[in-house]
Structures are given as C-alpha cells and as structure tokens.
Length: 299
Image (cartoon, rainbow, N blue to C red):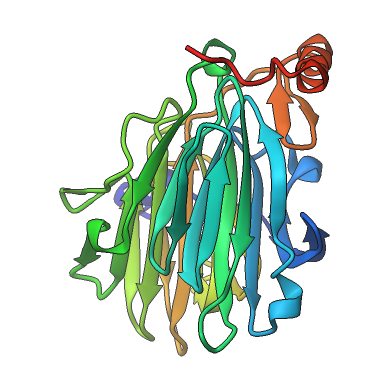
C-alpha cells in the first residue's frame, strides 16, 4: 500500500458501531422507533435522542404528544409525510408539513404540544432529534427556527447524490438553519443505485447516519478481498469514528439517510424526561418550578 492510499484511509471515517432502532411508545401512545437515547450516552454527544416514526395507521400516532415541558435542549422535528400541529406556552401556533423542519431551542423552558394529523391517506412519517445545550446556554431565551420545505436547498452532486441541506453546507450551498451553538450539520441524502456521496466532516465532531430507506455501504474501509464492509439497511444507525470525511455508496439498491454531526460538549448530563441539565440539583429546581408555576421565564 503506497503512502497516498494510507493517507486517504487515515482521513476516512469508518463506522465504529452500527445498531438497529427499536420499537417503542412515547407521548400519549405514539408508536415509533428509537434510534438512540439514554443507553447510547455519552457516545453521541451532543445528541441525546433520535426517534423515527412512520405509519399509515392513525391509531399509531393520533394521540400525539400533549402538553409537556422542555429545558436545556433543542428539539429538531423533520416531517416527511403528514402534518404536525403544534402550540406552546409562549403563544406560538403552527403546522409542520412535509419537508418542513422545526428547530426549537427550549433554553430556559417552554411548555408545548405536538399533535400528528397524518395526510389524507393516513400517512405520517418523520423524525425528532434532541440536541443538548452547553451549560452556558441552558438558560438562554427559547426560540424557534421554522423552516418550510421550499426554503431547504437541494444539491445535486457530481457523484449522483441528491442532498437536502437543512444545516451545514454542501458544495458551497448553506442550509437555512444557522447560529446553533453545537455547529451542527443535518443532511437528508438520497442515492440512486450506483451513486456515491462524500462529505468532509470537522475533526473532533460526532458524526452519525440514520438509514430510513433502502441499503448502502457506509464504511470507507476496504475488506480483505477489496470489498467494502459497511452494507447497512433501513432502520439502522451508523456511528462514525474519527476522521475528516464520510463516504457512502449505493450499490445494487438506492438508499436514503440522515447524515448528522455536531460539536461534542463533554459536560455532565443530568436527564429526567424532557428536561436535560448538568446536575441533579438543576433537575430538582426545574421540577420545583414546574410545581409552583415559575418554570417559564419571562424576559
């Protein structure tokens, strides 16, 4: 192996772990698949939780997520099919429709609800990702970045990929979600059979992919006979090790996946339900404020 080949392989990120998402229920009885959560801490820092939901049966989702609090995190909702009606304690109301993203920074505290409605055929599909906030930002003012489908650019790469750029940059095209403290990248990547996608990643950032349609080769390392060793399927998480880029190839079948990265916080995590702080005392304070009606900070 020559020095140039060795250098290329040292820069490529390999899949350090891969696992299947697991069926579970949340909210008032919503059926979904949990890609990761408590059990994977802290290896996906700054990310905390990823849920994927896809159903054509309204009984699986219509009870929704009634009023509940959040503090200390950001929740990112990305809808593929159907609509989600939402409202909160600050008076915000709206609908998240197919292709839309809601990037909510809970900060010091918000109480909201999310009620999936599906489409006319009963279909409902999408994701919710939780990203942690650093201690210095946990009590920042809550805010939303509401991004409509038409605002998210689609990049067609020379390798044959089609990429919806939600956060981060691809081929000089910047996604609409900006000014997030963990410096995230969030891409929705579609590859037809035979296509590939290579993406530079920032050294030290956590990088994972979630495959939600088809199958593809997610590992840059070459196997003993020159075959690549990372063929992964629908409902699988691929967590990458260190390096400077990720390469994914669709072989005989197309594949669609989320590619997400962010700057790890490397801070202690105290997590109870929808509230994530740094210490148990901060959790107790949040619970006390919920009881006495001072959880929402008016500034």
